Image 1 (tube, rainbow, N blue to C red):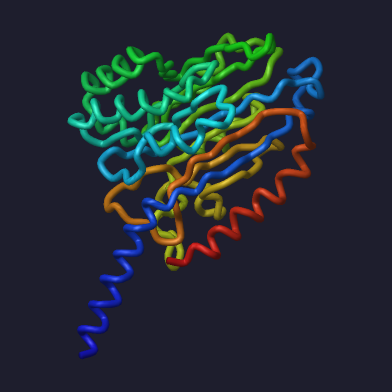
Image 2: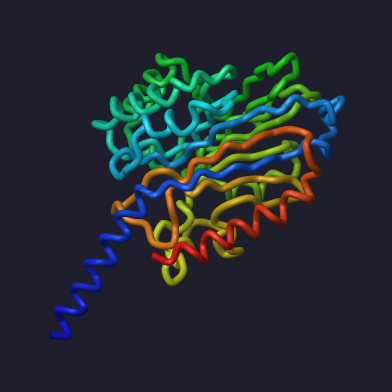
Length: 299
């Protein structure tokens, strides 16, 4: 009888863990730019809203793109940022491109920007080039250690795409080459461990993913110990600061390995860069929210 009880408990746990992959967290983060030395009048900075998706992992994705469009259709989305790990297998290139194309129905005025992650580099160079080409065909800008400037109501936003750090494809000098001295700087990258090497590279905000919030965060995400220094500092999700600059780690939308989550949830985040409140007033509540979510999501 005890074996039946144990097996039943395991089955229930796995069912709930699978169900968690449908339970999307929608988070809002506001980052003020009043400390930026590169913006002439930071108090007058017109807010820019950025829809952040990461770690789509087409092979283990429970969230439909139509749901994202429905959830954000009545909200202002100026830019879509996708920070890597769209897929693992070349057969899912059409699926990944179709997913992104559907989300683009939100019509971001500043466009859709993509950087690659370590799982994207599982593809052969030829297939990775195909993925890049197909994303560009639908209007995405794929940044591989490159930067591009867009303008929002006349004010520049420099988008800096740093390639994947964990697979040694990142090149900070190339990424920041030619970036103007004035204007807000937004960094997109997959592996947030790179912030430990960016002290000499000025930016205002950085978006990343990679850790999935642990994905199986029970009792603790010990498996992240091999994924760089940040997990050893218990920095695996949410809003943080390094060298006085804010960066954000998304829990990601899809899963890797197995399609389950424990004490983590898929995440979609809307970041607003603006001048509404001092960053110091925002940092502590944001981190507190992160810890609360981890405590409550026990199943």
